[in-house]
Image (tube, rainbow, N blue to C red):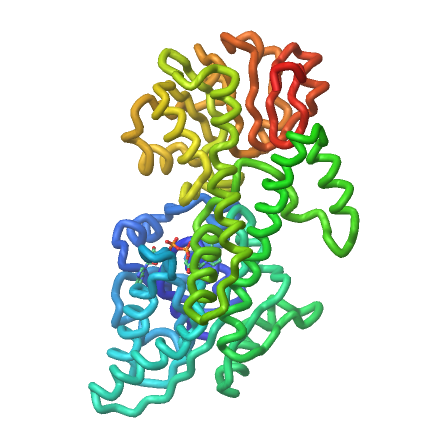
Length: 447
Ligand SMILES: NC(=O)c1ccc[n+]([C@@H]2O[C@H](COP(=O)([O-])OP(=O)(O)OC[C@H]3O[C@@H](n4cnc5c(N)ncnc54)[C@H](O)[C@@H]3O)[C@@H](O)[C@H]2O)c1
């Protein structure tokens, strides 16, 4: 099938590459000429495991192309995926300007039947707005060309996006047009060969499903983060509690880790957009206000522990910081808790020697002007001359570090672990003072 992807970011590029992998002819459009130049010259604008190989293979096979030419993009695909950003507006609602601009371009230029597919995360009712602007453009041109609008939210996880797209848990298709449903089913058939995981529903339910999924996951995280603070006060261990409740199949083990708060390009904005939609609909979801408030508080918990131990004035102190990306296996720094943590440390006068296996360049781009922040190129280099170590992202390479070397490098052998990577007994054995989240610190007296 001929497919156009509008917006070649994390979602658009993965979608385009994976659809090409199944034999479709895909043209990816982006307005960012630098991004398209990078892709055209064989480069990769984002870090996503396995993506470069899929892109290269399909470009070589002639099934995947990139362009900044809107006219060519609209002409190419019968299926037009909209995968542009939907950032938060000032009031927390989703800003639809990019989605509607993309839809308007389709209406302005289309000459034959199109299925316009919202893959961006968009509030309930956006399908109607997309249909409205396309119809308006067609009316202005005085032409009558058929089209359908479909909601097809994306559930991939950054860091595992290719695997998620190739083997989806479910594919949600919100549509009422039979021809469009048939085309969508056949597009996705290769991805669900062993058993059908396609859920066809109305557009509004599909739109709401995406927000509901992210809000539920964010709620689990905030629940555990809130509980971790209770556990600290009551002398319980959140890790034990996690295992104790996660083994109940009704609860399950996923998304139950206490940490430094959720971040990324989706949870924060999607929770806030759903809260906004609910309020506007006259049915406020108060639960989500608590989810957001706990998350904001949690992003400061590690700094509070540092301040309790090293004092509020961190002038002359150096903190080694491991992990900048909002989670492992991505270079995405959008809403990363590290940004709040670094800003809070810098505000108190600390110098920060930060290391991340892949997000260094992106971190310098978004935080390069933070005074006292130095992004270094290894975990060991971050420790040089540091008073303490703070762990913010749970990259695999931090799981079994050289504890002797950490102790030798730090001026005070103290580790603040925002991801509960280590056992307090192990740290005790290496003579490292250890502060983590929702667990007794070692030695207990300095908690
Ligand atoms: N990143 C994720 O993990 C993820 C997962 C599921 C859903 N989503 C949703 O998917 C959407 C896209 O997210 P993303 O992370 O891929 O965003 P992104 O910022 O990485 O990419 C969006 C791209 O769209 C381009 N763009 C904007 N307007 C355009 C236009 N009119 N025509 C062509 N290109 C245009 C931008 O230049 C940018 O490259 C969002 O709604 C997001 O909530 C994201």
